[in-house]
Image (tube, rainbow, N blue to C red):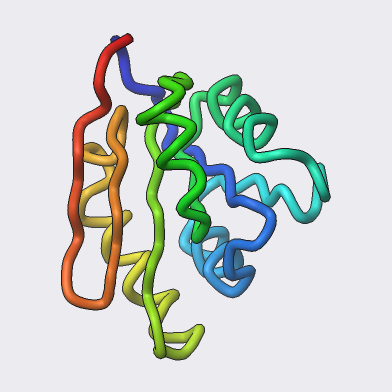
Length: 125
């Protein structure tokens, strides 16, 4: 598989919008589901991200079931589980992860929590 030339993201509908804005200000292309496709289902969100060859940004654990149990295809998912921190701190942490590990996020299911980043390569179908 190849990697897209440009790093592109799709932010799930309930993903912290301050992080979306911070990533856009940093020059990243981010499609926010809340802006373009409000109220669509999780499988539809994942399909949009896949069609765009984008990494999905989410705070919803349900995407783990879609890609691990149901084996839905994806280009990469970053599940953000940062608890009890400000939006400003969340922006900093997510931007740091993307800047430092962007190529590791492709074809992976990554979980960013308060104390660690776990990156699990996707299983092939």
